[in-house]
Image (cartoon, rainbow, N blue to C red; front, side):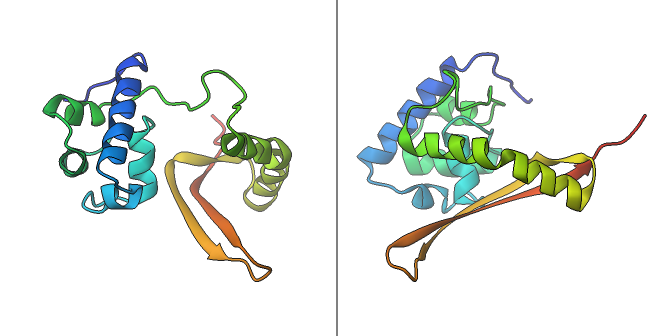
Length: 156
């Protein structure tokens, strides 16, 4: 039976346990996700409290991290989502994503509507990919792909 969380308390504690186990075992998110059958991006988001994991993935991740049966069950529950409970993030990396949205959200909205019409880009039927690439000018570039299904507004 599907379980639903109504507060973030238990999931926050589980996230702390996951991060501690990850550090103690010296694992990367890629290594943790390896046997889950899911992308590292989705598994990472789930382990940080943003998604439930299917049973098989929760078991695989739980085994890798040494989680208890209760913790594995909690990974399968539908969480209260949201990463910014205190408002504008103060962590510099998180703030830069917030800043990107502040600067480019109106541009993205305008271009989505121009190309697709009135509707939204789904965050449910969605894929995320993060890649590290060499920059021809030196250093590295972070390439983030947000791939969401377009859902048109339907008059009723």
